[in-house]
Length: 301
Image (cartoon, rainbow, N blue to C red; front, side, top):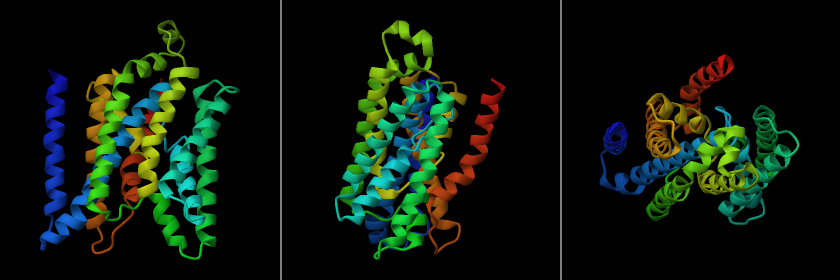
């Protein structure tokens, strides 16, 4: 019953934020259809995917600070997208390949260093290294500027064609239908050695979950860029609401992540109007205090 009430409340909140985003100082219906609606769909979809993949990564790696952003998977996707743009290849294909290579490096490293803390630190190093390479590539590409690189590494949601935005929304829904049936795998892996008795192992099911999550994240990173902290804090918001089993936590995190990023994009568009800020700058302002709180709780534990 509590789960149904929470989902109903989050759906109402989602509709309210959508209406606020779409209707704020709207003077022309063409702006609604060709600018605001596509932007809202992309923001909500990306936030939802970051929320649900955050649940997966934290469970699989048994670490409350794990997320595609912290572990460098988002940076790997962004680097792959940048290399693809440099050589005039399809950007999203490059993002997918870059994220898969990063997951491969994480799995390879985890075979040597088993603790989640060491894997997390390795991911942080990969994240910093690839972010630096992205800045370098943008600096040498004649058609781009360093400001473009800054916006891409912070996540800038620009208006997309309505059909493409609707496709991204459908991909985010697909993420729920694909990952939700594996909720028991996530729960078993989060138990560590106790989860071994269920027959679920990191070397098999865990790697599958990391790859599937990376695929969904990379599609959005190739379109928007890197958005940090949403995948870290959103699962913890879901847990604070009382949901710890992944089959309940995933849908809650999807809606919370979607609403959080959509409202962050609303702030990015309105705070210093007419200048539009990178949405990652807003999520960092909101996410860093929550991140520090999670870090403090993990340290106490």
